[in-house]
Picture 1 (cartoon, rainbow, N blue to C red):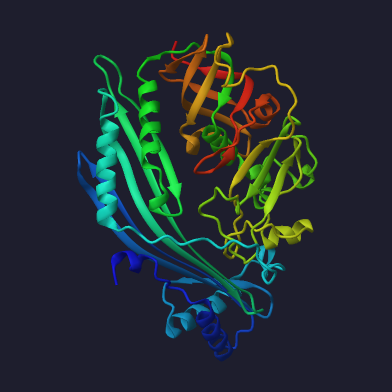
Picture 2 (tube, rainbow, N blue to C red):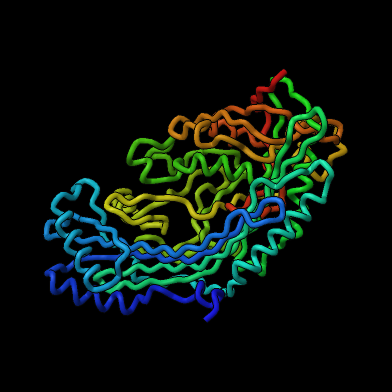
Length: 461
């Protein structure tokens, strides 16, 4: 068996695990339980100056067992041992922990854990192996450096292959399983000219197999972005018309995803409340969906941590909030159905899968688009937002973020040396003046370019 065959060989057997858990729980006198398990095998390479910098291979597995006692309290245990001895210990440990369960936040089985899943069969791609990945990345590094005399190094780079499995089972007969392959490439170049600051930019590609990654387009994008930042100037502080690229706008939306998170609402750390359904949160020509099964999401899974099917869920429709993201527990509290966005735990987390931003109609917009660079209007094009971990106050709605981008004036782009954009997310969503028609798939979701007027930008001059 070759290394390529080994990486895609299944580790989890859901039917066998279910049969053994059913038997072992009966022996332990446990009547209600569920299990979530995941397993991954991956290889990755990094290079530096044409030589291997890091070659890595790993195999990980994680099993979570939950047990409910006669009072409906839940206990939880994690293990990596799928043997009968390991599962028995996990069952006993979870049962003992259930005596200390939180009665106010006790989850239950999802009412949708046994419903039919959407068809989401994925083709599994064979791994090319670590030697092939290394040679491909060495060549990519060399080609990127040769794109321009100012590009000296590619300090951050990587090429990887992954095989991933996931299983959910419960004592009511639910059985979910999936497997997938995934590959990723990132190239981040650094360029410098005499008496000028070094400038950097990069590109990412993700696909279901390394054979599907367009390495040349990744090289060209990284080179073009990096080169475009060589001619930089400071920018004056002021209010500007701003165009967010797809990646930048999705970064901002994700940073404030607690607006749609029912768990965050119940915990009092969201801008929304129970009564926010129907609230006009944005301009009327914006819609936002969360669709984990979208064809551009190479990490898609047909069920969540509680076995609830993944679906296409509208969050904003024509500017109004129409749904929240729910787990079983939050859905029960709100009197709705779970939406397929739960993790697994004693207090279950909720998170989005794959944001899809779209324009509701084709009404004429007076603002320019990127197809009309001959426009005399001045604006800032934001390529990427930085320091999201520290510059966002999600529960307050405010942000102040350094960014990479260009000032476009008379159709000519000039890279901005350094600047920060600040504002309030709800005000920003209502100051959108154009949503371009073309939806662009990124490594984190799908969105057009978004134009927002009167944004506060602080520069160095």
